[in-house]
Length: 409
Image 1 (cartoon, rainbow, N blue to C red):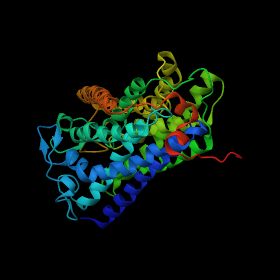
Image 2 (cartoon, rainbow, N blue to C red):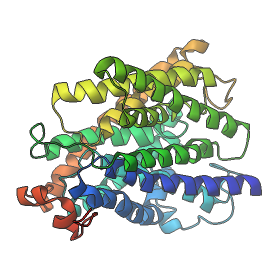
Image 3 (spheres, rainbow, N blue to C red):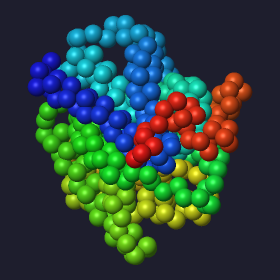
């Protein structure tokens, strides 16, 4: 056990936790002012719910003793046996409780990402049920498949350093299904739904960028050279994607917006997440540039073309960006960066791209099917969507009995 590594992962865990309040600001600034607290609530209640779910059952389902490559066993139910001694299967240099805590912060933010797609129209009780069921039946199994000892995608050789499949693809495609099941916001295309507070969104984006260093570099599970490489790759891709978005937005719309540059940075961070521990900084530039481009196309062109109401672009950013990042890992990965990984297409191993594509397809199909089933089951128990009067008055007053801004502001 190494005290320096332990300190680094504790700090990284705190940085990843900060990303969820950062997400609340990022999303909250993009909704109308009558829905800002309801949007904040999605992220904050997820911190509470999933922190408890992870301790009670989530961690053992994701990282417990493998059951046929599909799920972890219940040997660590309620953190039974997860203490201060290291678990050599996952991190021989860290107390097991620290590894558990680090992974808990990933489990928290992933379902919170989905909330961007259903903003301004989902009932709070339905959201609570959805988050708990989704974390248990989607996030935990996928985490085991990719990261758990014995998980079938891990055994297949799929590379996902910090959560391309586990976090972004699973949440992104689930977000699309949630948006489709709930339907469009009332008045979409007829009344203004412009962001009510862009400085809030930009602050949230900055907190997400900051926290992402803990998210990605912390996934090296030690204060070492690999963590340093991941740190640089993470920043490089974010910077490249922000620049790419700025350029393509100017060519497409005639102006570069602050919301666009912030969205571009987030897109680059999403895209580099699965690859960050396997690629060079030069590859990170390419991953970021293409990540910014494909996410811009998804958000600014495809969404309008197909007409779905992914309110805050959870699918366009995380689903599309995560898919590109996972595939890019199969192209640019090199064992010169991480001997525990694999070489990709450009380093003489085209099979790795096929493995990555398979892992993406499996995750997408499972997330779509499971999310649809979960929402339909919840719909049998309680209404998913607020009524028209509640939607018109805003979720802050209708669901929570409070307003973000006093009338005189």
